[in-house]
Image (spheres, rainbow, N blue to C red):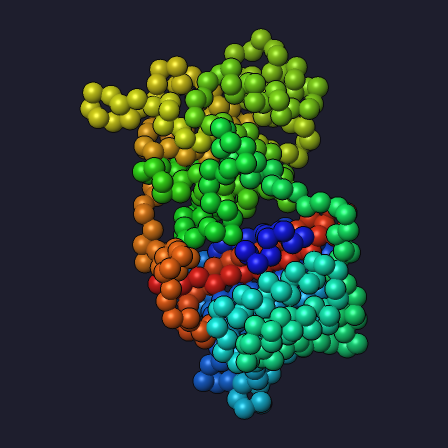
Length: 448
């Protein structure tokens, strides 16, 4: 995404790499929410001439997804454009007897599909996608955007630029109309609401975590945390040594489950020291409802006050809160046995918050990042806090990280190789009608 930084386009990520999970995500959004679905990863054609995209099952096993499965995941809310950024997605199988995956999607009802006619390298595919989306976000129609992409690839002296193929159904009206209006004099937001939470408190221009487009790996951890946060667990405790990316994972979870534009969650963020006064101050600052302010200023003890607030004090009836306690090790101390435990003054406010979340009967959630694992005094509540240890990157994740380091270059890989598929989705809130909305999925490595 470096090539599209500053472009009117934002990201929506589907981490699972699983078509059934993509379908669940897709159905949470209304008609015409997404302009483009971008699917990137490893694809090929099997011995029977059937094109497929390598995906995963819900348990992480390899699954070769056919065009029908992808169409079913998007059904009744088809985007205006699908980009199959994988090898041979625009190539017919069985010497032309079997339609390509792009053509098969057209036959299943989609209006316009982009695919590659032969194996293509990652660098070329990335450059093509960046130019295409930048052109669409500038207000060009699909035909113009593809022409600009061809020109860009030719100027870069890429010999197989013509392998990018557009398949259209009917009169291709979608190709002759711009997806969005040009930006004009309107300014792009510098940072999202979630990104602002993770800025360095001593330097508001410096993020404490890596950028979303630079995030590498941790897909299994994200999958597990998302599944449990959407279930009965009260929250997640991410623990491990400093520098392993606990806060970055927390930010990615927020972007997936608590994006204020695409979910019913608002975020209450606490950095380091945690106490009753700070918690109530944060809640009061966020609260815009009269009922909520009355509850917070009332004389109830802390736990029933928080419980009542979480039930009756939300700004809107359907809103919930995602509490993030970042760098929580400040609130721990080591006991005589060498175990890390809550400081005495932290026990009451933390247990009041966790108990209130449990008693509210609503899906309020908690994310804690901490160097050390610790237990809650209440055994039942402690069992409902998922503990996720983070270790240093290894295997395919480490390889991806090394590939991005300056001076660390490996031979370019073709997208025809084997690999599983993670999920990245790109969306945007058009707001004034100018921002391109894209959803997609991105490839990962199967040997994770």
